[in-house]
Image (cartoon, rainbow, N blue to C red):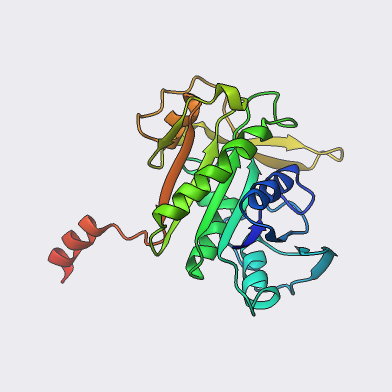
Length: 254
């Protein structure tokens, strides 16, 4: 099996090495094509107004001055065009990608682009808690991801579907199992703008989250799984059409 590994945290991110370890537990034929720098939050963006710069790091490892989507296209359409990958793994992201994170995530977008290109694709993310950003429990993904991915591939990923896997913020021995989940939803009232001033008294702003109590997540969601120290596995469709409302609109506007 030929596996392509990418991410959005960049070529030097520790989670990329974790993803390589996961890939090599499944196959010896592993290629890495990742962004030159951190591209967190770029979603499914393409670099249309800037050229892509490709840097050979070593062996089958390459860095692209571009987005995760650029990296997947560079790999599939150029570097691996004579022998396309059989599987794309995107991650392991530093931080969970659940609920509305899915729409912002470059990690999920890497798997999304792979799915668009007809290649089975999995996004992998590691949750962390307060004060744990620099040392998330990477071994959780290392231990559980290879077997999970093998089982998913054996089941068969449907066309136009990608798999979003999130590991809880706990060490492997504390994991309470696997939950197949739907995408959750947070309280977006927590999202705010944090105004600040630089050394020359010029204003600048950070997007931030208000510190307040969080409501209990709904059962069956990715948020609920992580809160219970379970691994969340969520199948996501590329087709975002709302069919019930489409039918209603057709009746009204048809």
